[in-house]
Every structure is written in C-alpha cells, then in structure tokens.
Image (tube, rainbow, N blue to C red; front, side, top):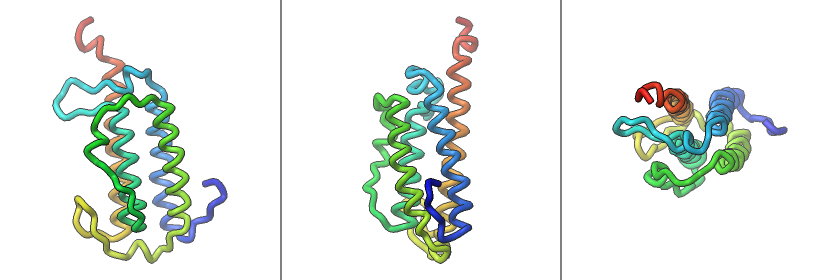
Length: 162
C-alpha cells in the first residue's frame, strides 16, 4: 500500500487477500485481446471477462465502502451485466481509482468496525468481518470464472473442430 498504515492488522489481512487478487483479475483482463475480453462461453448465464471485472469492482465498492463504511456509492448492479465496450485500459483505470479509495478507507478503519452488525442489501445482516469475508469470497469466485472463460476462449476452435 502506498504509504498508508492500517489502524487494524486484521483489516490489513483482509485487504491483502482482496487487493492483490483484484490486481491479478485486472491483469488477466489485460492479457487477452479485445474479442476475448467480451467473449462469453456458449452456455446460459455466463458472462464475459469484462462483465466479471466490472461486476466484481462494483461489488467491492458496495461491500467495502457502502455496507462496511457507510459511504453511499449508488451502485447499479444490473448495469454491471451489460457488456459495454470496455477495453483493458478502461478496466485498469477503473480499478486504479477504486483501489486508491479502498486503501485509504480501509487504512482508517478501526478493528471495532468488524464487530458491528450491519444490513447487506442481498445477504441480510452480517458483521463487518462477514462483509469482508463475503467480498473476498465473491472476488475469488469471479476470478476463477474469468480464468475458466479465458481458457475456454483460447480453446474455442479446438472445441468446435474448426
């Protein structure tokens, strides 16, 4: 983290699980061509890597800033699933801006916030610790889907016999 010191070692551990995984996620998106970034597997309810990144960043913003730290973000979750014409640079810029906001906010978060029960818009009530666990799990789940999508994109011609 760029000079920020966390008030809580436990919050720092959560950030160490989330921040670098999102770095990898955005790097994965940057490692594939534009067609691959927007391709989705030929199965119902699958998403492109671009959508997975945008959705995961929206989830992090909502979970950490709004649910955990009570900073309204005005998330439009449904809009995250519209495959807009993002390129890797757009996703990297979006992540860089959000990463800075998350680092600053979390670096100032006292450990006591992890004990407070709050209301999550889709998961009911949970402690601040539960919010961070949920955020880390959500990120890991979608990163895994993005890895699989990247691999399927690379194998698409051998799957069709072309």
